[in-house]
Length: 333
Ligand SMILES: [Mn+2]
Image (cartoon, rainbow, N blue to C red; front, side, top):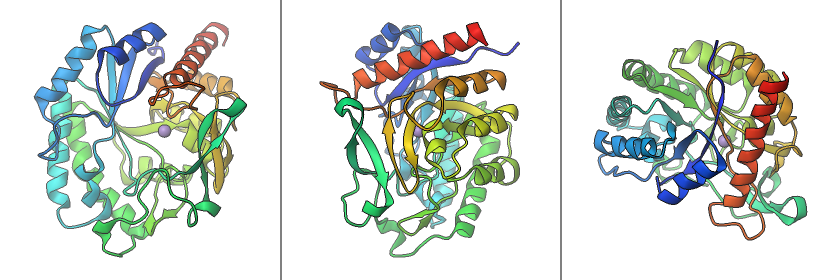
């Protein structure tokens, strides 16, 4: 029998008493950290620092499920195929080895050299603030996330062929080390999932390209998908449930971001679970039916009335919604 899927709290960068207590009070079994604030002046994470956060998490009775995203400058030259990438790759290998030694089993990563792009926020249900993307606004509106122009490229653009080659070069160097170290690597979709932004080609904007990455370019038992339901929902032809079934049946869903949007590229806005493009009950049911045994976190969440900078209210709502869905699906399906 496979292990039951779990729910974790995540998307914070410091292992504070407040955040760990909040996770315990909500009732999750573990946590994920996004771009943890660790000393990184040498371009990689050190064993002692990783062990410290792992031990702290353990001391609260929580499972440290994953670290998600190193700083982009750990591997930006690798993504863009620039001189200096081999040194970055050596350092990335050190991070993987140190994570394995510290007992941290998963590294989420992305292949977005210029970040997540969002146009100005919109209002959702009863006035909550949600993030949004509208390609018609890219040129006129200030971007609220992402980098419009990468100085490091000095005006060059990057084609799809170059990007695939850079990706192949990177994964061929790091995945064998991940396997040795006992660490899994999980790739997040491009957000927004469009073929190109700011002259930089995207890879992870379609179901087909995920298939190509997992089955042809970078196959490894330690390589899988950080399945962001929100991003798969943002894609054109956004068959979220179909993608869960396809990759789930092949054991390629390593962990899940559960959020949703209304609309898809070229224009969408985020929303509460249950009012977006996919049915959250059917999504959890599909995970269970494909024997998913990893963890789920929410992701970015709507900012509710009187919410904090980190959106505690939004995270509590989404996480409790997911916990209840998982319980219901195990009892009823
Ligand atoms: Mn996500």
